[in-house]
Amino acid sequence: MVVGVMGAMPEEIDPILKRLENVKKHEVADNVYYTAFYGSLDLVVAYSKIGKVFSALTAATMIEKFGVQKMLFSGVAGAISPALHIGDLVAATKLCQHDLDITAFGHPYGYVPEGKVYVEADPRLLEIAASVAYKQGVKLKRGIIATGDQFVADAERKAWIGQTFNADALEMEGASVAVVCDALGVPFFVLRAISDAADMDAGFDFDAFLQSSAVKSADFIFMILDEL
Ligand SMILES: Nc1ncnc2c(CN3C[C@H](CCSCCOCCO)[C@@H](O)C3)c[nH]c12
Image 1 (tube, helix red, strand yellow):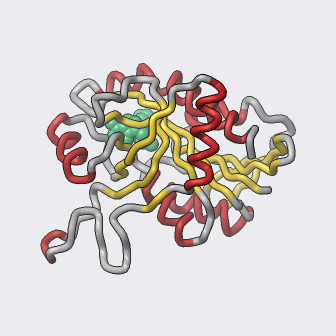
Image 2: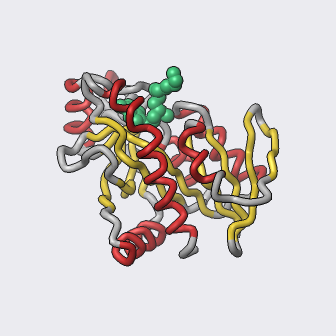
């Protein structure tokens, strides 16, 4: 089975790549895709670069050019829910785009015609994640993740996103990966470890915790890969 493991930044996939052997590099569509065997799995690993457009391109390339059959996203996120603290893992039950706005025409935030506000993650992959978390004694929360093309470092913006979408965490790539995978019929799972609280300290906390939180997410991704 061909499994895609995506991140947005190098720091999010470095902890993945360093645990793989005989990694091959492929330059496709202005990006670098790494392939390697992991047990019985063929892995395709890449960071997309930041934001919804780059992550959509990488997800589509992984599926269309590399034949990815399941997509796992590993990375960091800003916390919205007060129950989420730096280092905590959160798996997306569904994802939305908080900066998609044609409300001037009476549509809800995050909605465009023929689209949907939320895209649901694969229940089977969520079930595997919950089972792995239980067996390994890892605290794994599940929640709604809101995606937008902005680094949120403002308590008011964060609160608006939380209230408008009932979101628990926010980032810049998950919902676009979800739309691509949903459209192309590929089960997907988005895992994030909290790096900051999307408030006035977010920039400082992000710099301080990006690496350690990215490792936490990557380590759990390997626990899921071991079950696939
Ligand atoms: N509060 C927050 N708001 C939005 N997203 C996040 C995320 C999740 N990822 C991290 C990264 C931030 C890109 S800006 C830093 C770029 O530095 C590059 C070096 O200058 C982007 O890929 C989204 C963590 N905290 C967030």
